[in-house]
Amino acid sequence: MITTLQQAQASRYSTKVFEAGAQVDPDKIDALIDTLCLAPTSINSQPWHLYVISNDEEKARLAEAAWDNNKPKFADGSHLFLFCAKTEFGEAEVRAIEQMVAQVRGGEVDEARVAMMTNYVNAMSPAERQEWMKRQVYLVFGQFLLSCALLDLDSCPVEGFLPEQMDPLLDLQAKGLTSVVAGVVGQRSETDFNTLDKAAKVRFARPQMVTEIR
Ligand SMILES: Cc1cc2nc3c(=O)[nH]c(=O)nc-3n(C[C@H](O)[C@H](O)[C@H](O)COP(=O)(O)O)c2cc1C
Image (cartoon, rainbow, N blue to C red):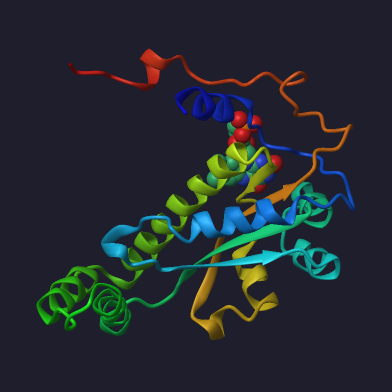
């Protein structure tokens, strides 16, 4: 398991050129989606929503909101994963989660916990709360990247798009959502210039990144 994990992380890289028209194994996409749905978030808030787009016209349409260097990735990848954050989070959302807890585990809704969690989120300003929700999205996103590697799926993380252009394309505001970050999954092209044989992984050495206090 340890070797598998390290190998997966060492062998993944950001695919810059995808093979247009190449489809990835739908079973792997299903496994990936199911895995992401189990991701942990602060106070189990789960303030995120994921769009998984495999329709060619739709990918091309959404590519319009991407930076120019990322447009071909959106269009040529097999699946575009668009990670969104909720735009509101208050008592109603806390209550919905606690109702789910009561349903799954049995018993009544824990009103004290509803009050405590509502106080926790209400203590943040609206801007801080939005930022907090985006951080939860990034937790899921990190798991997406590692999961792709473990499933041997080529992927590219993409922050390079304009949420203010993306959101209207999917009518996200009306759905109480805003786009945060994207991931393209597909098959690397032979012309990809970023494969590890052409562009070795560059990371700081462990002592520069980690202080171990034993
Ligand atoms: C949050 C995030 C956003 C990124 N956005 C883009 C992007 O918009 N376009 C792109 O080509 N690469 C993007 N990358 C790829 C990074 O440049 C890449 O992960 C980094 O250089 C390390 O290389 P590696 O992923 O190949 O190991 C992004 C990576 C992360 C983690």
